[in-house]
Length: 361
Image 1: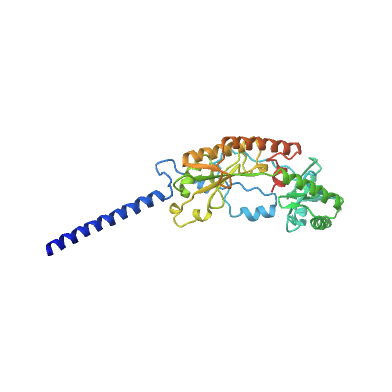
Image 2: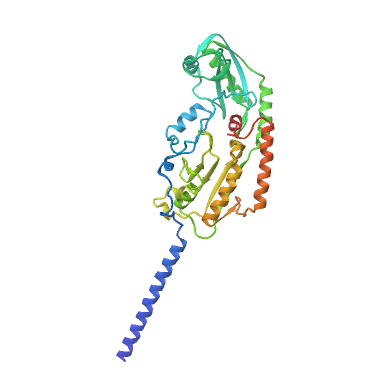
């Protein structure tokens, strides 16, 4: 009897050990299966120089630019030696700005003009700027120290993505311009407020109809991705880390211009203590259409990047609601964008131009 109990106990113990072992093996297999995919250490890593490269920042407001770029490293020259500098041209244009002329009896130094500028370059939510006229060159230019100006013009943007210039903002523009004119001993002339506000509304209506920010969402079919896995695959297509964690950008060919494309994923996952253990099941590829010149072929590059990344990472390209985008749908989007580009061109607001970048900001 004792012998048979001992045998039974041994059998039960063996069965229990096998069961525990099976559970351990199953849990290990499950955790491995569900773990986010990691970057392959044997493939080309993301270059250290790219880790310090940041997306270009373009802001027409000098005050905003100064505060937002102090903490940002410049794009490394050795990483983007092919990039050229953007043109530095006068900014104000009657097409999208209200202009006020300021006459002076004698030339004013750039230093004095700069000192007379208001502390903020905003009128409500709109950009406020002053330019000086150089008689020798017969050109308007942004104010600079060491120059002498024979006339000035102040301007406020008619519209941006926040909306159209309103009566209150126009009145604030008049006050700031008059204060600047008084400080330099000049005389300011203004256009009619009602006419300019009506023009602002018309421009805002056009911009609203022709604005487009296109996004594709890439979703994982099976296993989730780690931040490093996404970075490695995107880096092969030319993306570099952006300013914000969880953001990468495809730089424009001209240094200082907005990025052609952006790639964003969960910021919390990017900032986690151990990002390799942070599962990401989707990320977004985006194109700001009016901000990017047609010559950059932004949609072609967006589509190619989405299809390529989906194939390499075992993902699928969808819209924002999770619907898979077919080739026919992608073709139609391309045709629609061509019409949008043509409409912007016809209004002298070509996508990627300085005026378009200001209007659609």
